[in-house]
Length: 457
Image (cartoon, rainbow, N blue to C red; front, side):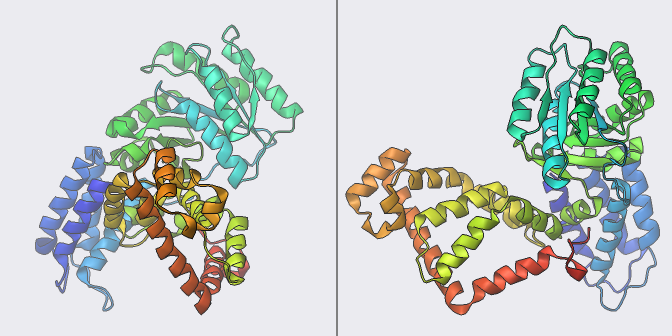
């Protein structure tokens, strides 16, 4: 998300370099470019107008701090305004109530509501250590209940059975009673969607809302609909008291207009965004972090959290101990690293969160399309355990067999073996110099905030 906006803003903000002072004249062209960039990103016109007015008011005539260039000062102003537009205050879920805390999910058909129910269930279970039950009251869409049952199984959260011949209100009440009996911390209720907001839909969800009294009512909206997403959320909010928004399919939206428009138009905070189709592809929405990514300054905090959540610490420690004992980095270790990288969303996802590396993410993605991790893993899987542990035994005939078994070419096998050799040398150097231990200690320090606690958000 925001690829085009990031490119435009990075190029535009560089034009102020070398100026001793920000004035109306020397920022006029920059503001014009920022305005065009926002409009091209499909940000709603009233939001763009308010944004530009605020930036101009703060920037014109401001003296530049000695340690900052005018460009840096202007970037800070733009960053602050982006945070303000998307909502600066903490907007986490409010679950401080007598369990089970009920979360009601609303939205139009096709927005990704049912998938978001399962993703949120997994997020609450993994991040907040909550016991979660999910239920579908969508008795209209074919297989909607089956879909949530399958997703709940994947997310390893409790699923309350319902059937299309029941009334939505009865399903919700029965699920709430079951969640209480099973001492669940959270009950997430999926509701029926329509192709457009209609009277019957609103009457049904209002009745559900009144019966189960949710602590959170989240509107799920497709980010790819741009500023229409914000307009739809606003209409829905007029009918039902929303507490927040979940933006889905942000990985398919290069513009990002919805994220910059929803808060201003609805007055409701974005609480989560769907970043991939995977069941764990849901991220909490932090306006300050997203603003930093938009301006090409990375998002190190989110990267650290991903490492903490998705890296298998036991495997990492096992590898470190193995290398410390002087054993070689073999192809089974290499496969583990590939799998860990995939869990993190790949190289491009990691580069995107590092300061100044946003452009490199696109280059990496383009190169990886020609040589993705999937075939690399398939090649290693086509080897015998002995070949994986002792790759030096792989001769020409073995390479031919491995290539046929993995559906690749012999040159692909050769390339992988060469990459493994290079990585093996790097690991040996790190171990010899004690750099690996230092790196692990450094990561440990990054994981902790002041006083040894979790990193401050």
